Length: 214
Image (cartoon, rainbow, N blue to C red):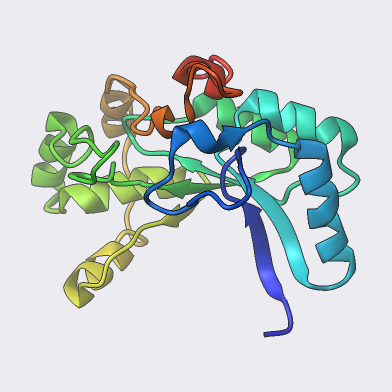
């Protein structure tokens, strides 16, 4: 491999050297994040041709603003949780103004995933009603809504039938009435960030981790 098309900072988090940074992550191992130093290293990767584009994931508007104050190369992308039950309207407006593309992870709400997944999308009565009248599936309605926001949609499946179904969102549109109903869906971030919160760490609460953008 000679280069990456896109290289991301996955979370605005730094771990102690030698700590387990996988699924067994321990919040006590989270230490202050060197945003400036990390981004300078990312920019160097870009300048060396090792990464065609560089970006971030799960940055709040506040953290993006902080990054942009010293970045010589702005992030191409901010990859964030986004679905009908967490519409990210503030983030979309901010990134549009700054020329940062938004990529949506968990567009179906991560139904049943440990730690943070919920049923706010797949069991949503508004989506069920739209899907019934449209003769679509709930995932198709949910994915179509995200797609219509002008973001790239990251949806994972190993099932060929579901993959085919996911692609069948491109030849129709939600109407104004349907969009108005979706706008009424209560908002709730799925991943609160508890994994990175500790009384002795840089983030004392989920609200602090997300800079009040909960």
